[in-house]
Amino acid sequence: MISPWPVMAAGIPVGAVIAFAGPMGRDSALPRHGLASTEPWGWLLCDGRQLACQAYPELFAMLGYHYGGSGAQFALPDYRGVFLRGVDGGSGNDPDLSRRQAPGDGAASEVGSRQGDAVINHNHSYTKPEGETSAGPVGGTAVASLLPNQCTDALKSASCGELAQQSDFETRPCNVSVYYLIKFTSAGAGGQPRQGVHHGL
Image (cartoon, rainbow, N blue to C red; front, side, top):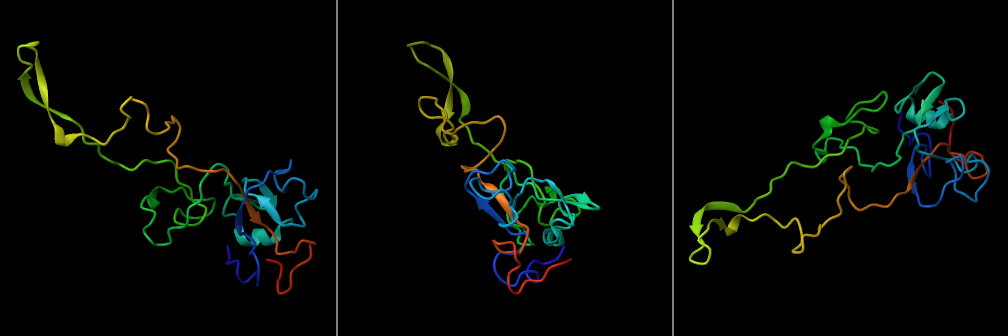
């Protein structure tokens, strides 16, 4: 895999990924109401499909078999249903780096690696019973007294309703779904190479 910058002198580099907010066409590769082919626009959906290396030489030069494939076929990254995160790059901002799953021919520390769901280890304080005391002449029943300074943060409202939406499947932030598209050619809208761009592997 090589750097995209020498391949494209200006504009959007091949291999760049954007978020697209519109609906997609039937072939899941172009905006609806657009042209019948994605070729003039140069974008593909990041859906993990395999492509012919000869049909997309610029993108293959960028990705190689990093996301899968072999021989005459290479794979696109599959970003459906996942969040994107910047590569740690030695910053220490990804403390669970060792648990990342490496992409096709790469390493866990490289672009394209995946991480599963996780919830950070944490503690909750709670109200602790302390000894027994008498309820006095009213009932005469022994009950536990409480230490008031050990209460946990509220998990439910006073009416016992949930304070946060629950899910049996994942832990997630508030989000909006989009399509992730990847640039596969340096050609302009008319299908012609831009000025200052060279092609080939």
